[in-house]
Length: 184
Image (cartoon, rainbow, N blue to C red):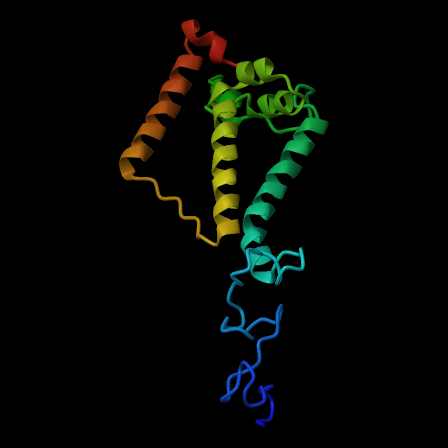
């Protein structure tokens, strides 16, 4: 018998120097230590019902980002931006009287948190669309993290031009008389 490895006696399964199989013990039936088990317990620590350390590490970044955004929305939901003195005024609005693409974003977030979607859309329609895009990206990031697939967001230069054009058009229209419905 070799030291450090359990061996089977001759004539029993596992003989000729192969280690005995021990159900539930990682690495005892050909699975290397640290490799996922083929038992259907993906993401859990060997069927214990607890998430594995690798899964926890993969989920740390998306859950941290989601927690930060949730905290920001909770704060804006609790501290009403419609009451003066709580938040700084937009510099573009203050010095030029023009609404930037973000003007009304805090009021939109406040209304969104309180379930007032019409009010949120009226304060900043583009922000509400952004909330939806954020939700989709977060869902994709979480799914990929659980599956162990890295998240890479690459946007082609042409799309940056489209995004810039949409922001510019939104800014222009909300500052014109016929686009006053888009003004906060």
